Length: 107
Image (cartoon, rainbow, N blue to C red; front, side):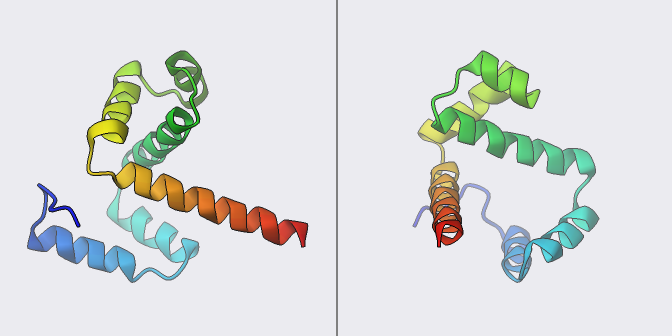
């Protein structure tokens, strides 16, 4: 397990609160209260950029499709390659979830 540079008790409490959310609807309710729409859209955009980079998409295509600046795309790419492995962890789990959903639809 990696030691985060950000680790402190207030962030621990925030992450504990997030881990208590039970479903997507609860996430919408909590994040709508705690974040601005812009903050949420920025986080969602970064995740979309990470997925597209992971899929081998080119910067220009990512910028057109997501509206992200090339600076944002570069930053996400840097964290994909040299960050705390958080993007890679969640991208792997999302891929597994998507595969399970596809398998269920086939049944």
